[in-house]
Length: 449
Image (cartoon, rainbow, N blue to C red; front, side, top):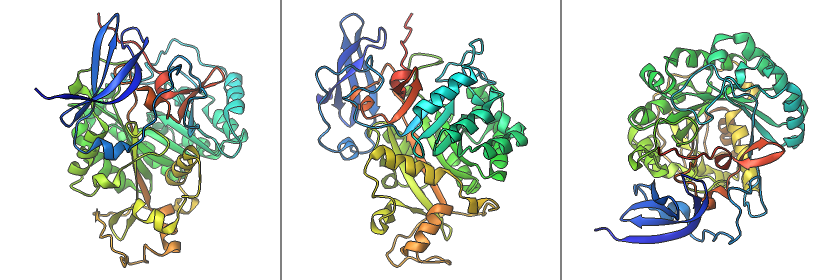
């Protein structure tokens, strides 16, 4: 029998009643679990690390203990014990949707009335910090609102630095004029639901084939210089084996596509069943799959924990394409002192997103290069056909125009929510004049009947 070792004491909730309870991260061999006991509803445990890599190296040392009187998650908005400022603010502008997906974290409700334009305008002016805020317009499906263009324009007038649209892309693919109007109103970039490179994936997750309309949305956004990041919800036995192809698809679409963002499925909202450990896709498993499925084009060492989230929540990889090679940008960032002077982690992450996901005006008429990418030969004297990547001017030029990101966010549900992770959340939903950590906002009970 494998011995059990307590690694860290934290807090969580009972997935049945949502009562806050104590929890522990425990190890059994290389695997790590979150274990907790509710006095009314039994003991629960959820796998959080499969052991492909050393968790101590990933998390680092010195994780702070939780305050004894921590009010998570019932005290949200942001309490004095919250450790991270807001990076991205989500504003939900509708619960309606034009799809009926099997997996939906929002569990949209087409019968619910939308907030009025006046209510949305009021929220935008309250939540936005002029020339600083990144606002994500979300839902439901925000493009079903007839006044979306005016909402984007209002966010711009209120002073938002970056405006992001979280969308399934159906209407962006069907209506080019709509995309043009959004661009002229000030939309910065699109977070495009993109679950795979085969229609069989969409049939299983979204109940209809969607690949062609997704590609049309990408083309329409490119025509009006709106950056696109592909966002894949990953579900075991449906598309986990498509991770490498999704990355290749995105790279072939560069500079139309600025990156790929993976969201391993979390079990809240509209879920088909209570999860088993096999249903879970952990951060280390995803990194392992990325390296394997890209055949080493993306290495595990190229994907790093984010500085403004807990290490078990997210990772990012920052790359440029140079001379048909994929070059990990973090290898050069310290040497070239590129965007490292911003002190606040949330501010730094926001600028990372803005600089990488927005399409510079210089790319307006750029075309996709048919590249067969290979891992970069990272030598100090490495040169391309066009310049030396270690030269500051050349480096900054390609970092702006030929960059590509690979990122991920593993949201928490009632089974694996960990208050030490929640305290470091910088992705906040704005609702009723509060900034609420994303996973706390969407937390829902499991129905075990």
